[in-house]
Amino acid sequence: MATYQEFIQQNEDRDGVRCSWNLWPSSRLEATRLVVPVSCLFTPLKERPDLPPVQYEPVLCSRANCKAVLNPLCQVDFRAKIWACNFCFQRNSVSIHY
Image: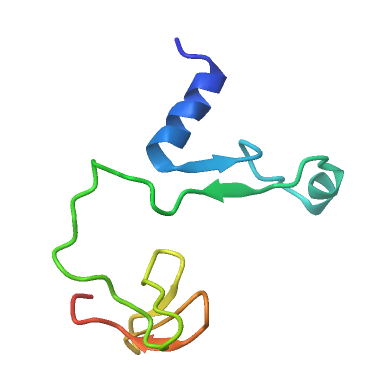
């Protein structure tokens, strides 16, 4: 059986995410007693060969000096068909692919 260290390394290699803790504090009191801050390191351009490629171009922010891409961290309002860029907070229309 793999050790816990190997398990964490396998998850990091697969997902591109490394956290400082393996669980979040369940209360404010526990959070204040932590010595190491709760945080995560993301590898946004991590190659994922198991994911199928999308069949259309990336959806970009409409602000001229931003051009961020619609991603899972953006807030999307499917009723109004808009999404908010999480870098410049510009409201953009949702593509017809959604």
